[in-house]
Length: 149
Image 1: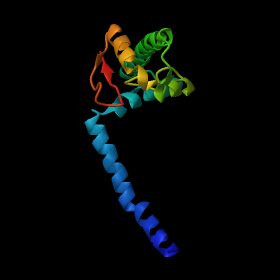
Image 2: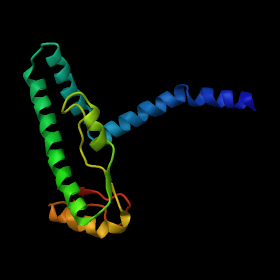
Image 3: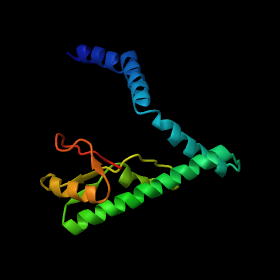
């Protein structure tokens, strides 16, 4: 039995896993329209600046990243304030929380606000989001609501 698991482990953590991980990475990169490119550009700009190198394209990428983070902050603050005022339980998740642990503003870029909320208040959240100018894309067919502007 031990030999079986050692053999299985060898297959799973060998070339098949490497191929699976690289294939998944390539698929998601294309499907999500190359999100890493923007993240890497902003981080590269910050690294170049710390080394004393100035490059206009990288500086613009950094500025764009910072503006995007600021815009996301404003949107999230409005959403959370509305939920607080309506008495809706919520918890910000993933990037909303992790961005504060990065050394510089803009290093942790986000493209959405992930917020867990009381599922029994979905109708109230929908009203709030629509009042803030968002439209529901996947409501009510999913437990993962997706709003956009």
